[in-house]
Image (tube, rainbow, N blue to C red; front, side):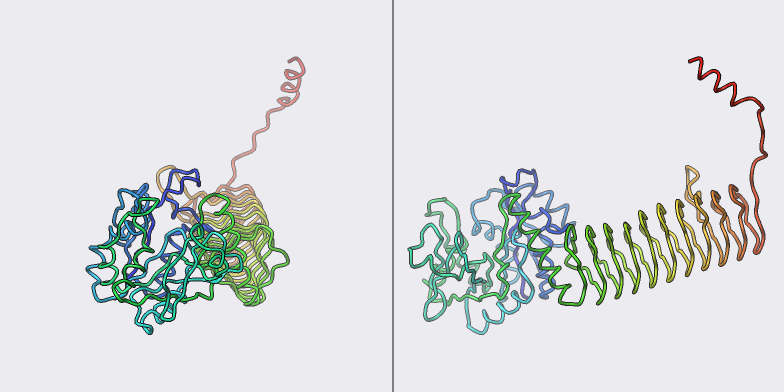
Length: 458
């Protein structure tokens, strides 16, 4: 079975942070996850991650998803792959993909197309390359009649070789058994005193094996990062590429200021994304929506023709023709049904809001099941926590919850029932009833005048 080794042991000292470089994030996801995702999408599930600096952080992030090996000393890319020889031996007879964990833009099509070329040409190694108009700083691919003859680093290239636009991405397909054999022949006979993976090409050619190159149609496969400026450039590239994809799919952007969209987000045709909006995780937005300005939607589903204005929504579902905002938070586990309207300064948490229900403003609905066509007045609170446990409220269809009502869970307001403004409801309200639960008013004559007099004395 085809397999992959991902090199993720680098420190990245110029990043000026105490963590492995592949865990730095592009659009909210570690670069390592981008590389893993490309492998998975290409159908490669047998993956070994080579860890090094702060190895425990790689282990914690992967949480057992994939095999890992430790490169205790960072002695070059070839040395990193050497640490995975036992993994390679288990995959004898297959082909192995070697990728860099800090080059996030490798894609599944490039992986699969390169493998097809690798096998069709009968290569022992196939280097994944790209052509750049400005190739300065990258190793150049020297082609021969039968494939490639070498990779020349920029500092060693002649003036003529520097004109070559085809460059090394740092990604390779190997015949697994040939890779194992060539690793045994690597030496540190170079200026850096390291084991270079690129030297396997010379070793295999010297043994009469074939080495080739596959030019990816995605020039971004070569992009990596060495410092914070580079990380910003990668984020900018990823952001612009994703927005470009959504534009091609019929999504509208009047401007792109502050807009960040995760690579797994799906957006329907005719939806408008306004400035300052951040869409991440497994979010799905329907057709004909207006999202923004300044919305944050994470791991949530939004139906068609819905308008969200200054909304934060996490791990929830919003149906069709819903209008929410401004300044609304939808917390995890919530379900807002079609036609609902939620106004300013409202928080919904782990609750169902029924069809055509209106939660106008300044209201907290937590751990509640709300029916359809319910009206919430201003300042309503479902009091769901007693200091020890959380309980749910049920508000049935067509109920009317008066301003400044506190519903002390667990309590049920029946169909068509009303609560009077200012009530604290501690008992179930029958259908079609009016519940009034207020304390008696006590008037203290002259209190305000005395208080004012004392304040004047001070």
